[in-house]
Image (cartoon, rainbow, N blue to C red; front, side, top):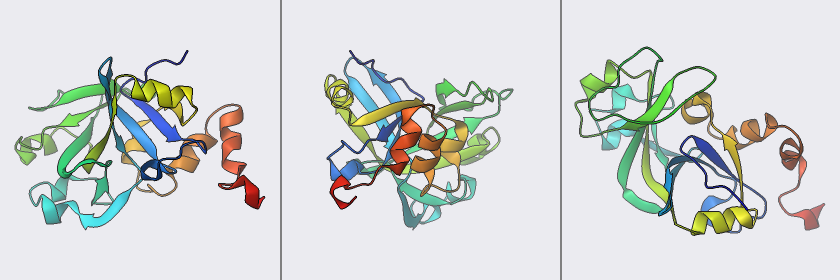
Length: 192
């Protein structure tokens, strides 16, 4: 029996995942309960800068300062994540998701309706996503049971790092045992 992923977990697409929307993706779980799960794809940056679509937020986002494709659901809406240093009080509109056990830094949802200057004074990093990934109550558990995703803990660097393209490889490489081996497996075993 598989366990429901928790906020702060990463869902790393396995070779068994057949949905092209999630091919080779790394998804941060933002919310999860019996009704389902919600997350954002971390490794799909777009060429559009945040400043082009949310001018007041452009100066606050982490590099690269682009909008990330968070997932196939509600791609016309935006969701923002931020990180707070361990000793900083959360700004107005902040919702804590998880605390990075290695650093004590807090990762949470940033209210894009809050004044950007209030958030700027508290956050160490902000990233904005267009859309999100969502699963119904049993759907995520079924996909985990089928082996479509590997569930591993996230670090702050996974969420706010500058190199989204190499994220899946970095995450898998640091895992113990067989998960690191997945990197050597060809995408199409028939070509081996």
